[in-house]
Length: 275
Image (cartoon, rainbow, N blue to C red; front, side):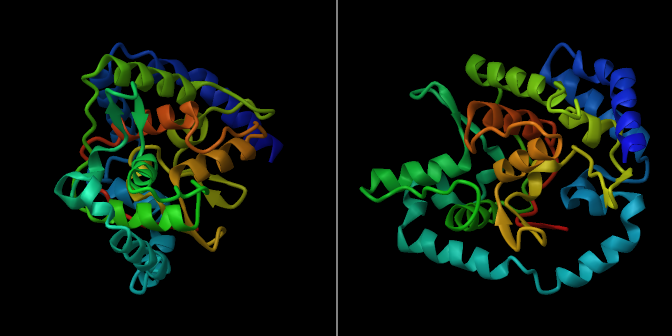
């Protein structure tokens, strides 16, 4: 394990700066895609919606995954989220009743002058109806409802609006977070999911950052249920021995903006299923 850790740190130092130092979001996106195109030339852009199962090294695992997805383990939770959505008439708070719009989240809110995630808008809707917001923003009811909301946009390509200066600033903040090293292992998000995507570590395959957000909330066997993207961010921070931030913190919302923009053009496939 020590050898693997040392190798990851060295590779990050050597290869980290070129991709991180792009001048604007569009240039960042082109460099990001070019990196993965060179690394995995046979993988189509749309395939990255399938997470690690898109990678050549996961060919055998993909067969098992496809068998599992015949009867998706997350189906009962998504159905529960649908019932909650309908019971509380959440569609009344969203454009087009929430159908086919989740591919544009997170969004910028001019009134709040802040990034708003899908989870936050679900709670905003509940509060506007005089109902209690959902407390746990990482799993349970929130994960189920968010999964249902985002599943209504499955097949729609990710497309974020970064035209507002405030949203652009949060993109930059998230970009810095993605490339910054942290924790006792001194890893960045990019160390594992850009430079070393497709490698094995501790018996697990490191997924590619491209398409990361397109399957969330995802069902993980490790969790035994659905979890939001911020739940996963917290887990990643713990794995590099860094103190995690709270779900819906500025740090994780900005990171979600950056990663989502880097997935521009890749269709949603919610809920995803991971090991």
